[in-house]
Image 1 (spheres, rainbow, N blue to C red):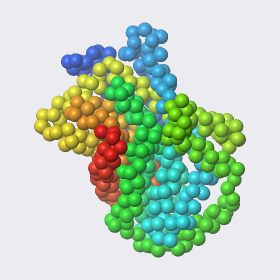
Image 2: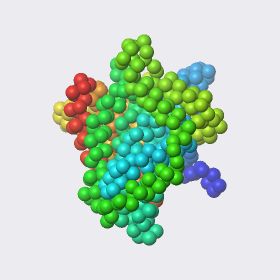
Image 3: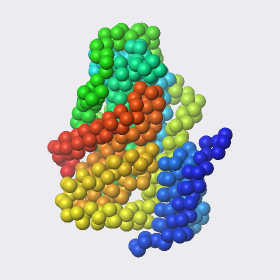
Image 4: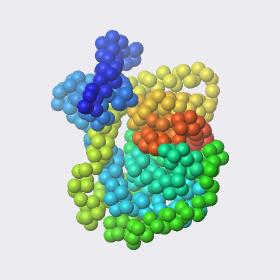
Length: 488
């Protein structure tokens, strides 16, 4: 629709799917009418998100409204609206929202840029060294930047572009292959890996934690420290491989970059000494990591354990009291409030699909089809994860993909005999690593691809290669690491 952010065709398709499933397709055997109607609303919502019929927050409002008015979860109107709004009471949603606001401080104070230029000044004598510098910068800021798009697109990508430009490498001049092509691919492919390493590194991760807890009756509740420790070894190995693999397949024309160190140092000189705001951000950053990792509880006992979301609120409170962030900054962080809204709607729908038995029904369907192949749980899990992972070629949103498929595939894997925590960690890693596949896989990809340094063919080739490497590392090395930790 002209002058608006509404795509009429996509919207009509999603509405048509809802009406078709609601009125023309009867519920399968073993599925209640309410469960089937909620599934119709859910599929319509996911299709609208994939087709970008409206901004995802607006779609979420329509989903909440539909659940409240149709009464698919509750016959009572007051009960239905309570159900529709129940997602807003989920603490993990607020963890991500508050962490996004905290990450605003990285950009406002310039600390994110300082971290990047410091790594480049240290590693920047060779092109591959710049690749590792960008990778380490991503890794350092990942735990407190739940928007992988903000991290990869708004902090790391501008640094990468400025370095490439300083070497005369630009798409406009046809000199991308000098260094920009290489750095763009490296910086992008690090983004999915760091997203997989921390619960707070990308917005959908807490949704995965909730879906795993729901599927296991809360027997498995993955904490921040459990996730971070599990992802440590496979994550660091994948990060170490990316600059080397890209270098082997698409070597840059410029391999020695002594000027990069000088350029980074000049940028740091331009920034001057660390500001008051940057010092506070470093302190808050350290505090968050120590408390999220459960260090006080480890040293002093369980009485000193602090809730992960409460820690995020503490960090934001410190930034507000010290004046590093103002309340106006909080109000202006649209992505945080947007995330809270759409996240709440999707969590609510996923929760009630589980409660109404839809997830069990669908997972049984998936499990029975794989079981017919006669493989043991290891091969069955590989098939399950591979189908889940490569289905992302058909998604432009990790959130939509995870919401649509994770719970059913996880439940199917459990039914096939896979160890619950092993399967949960493998699917959780795959849920971020699948961002590597296409130029529309997540919010960061169109930003980096749109800069023009990498052709569509090179992007897809590199994406496929890295997908195989990352999945192999996460499944084999990660699996052995989790075995050593006693997770399965």
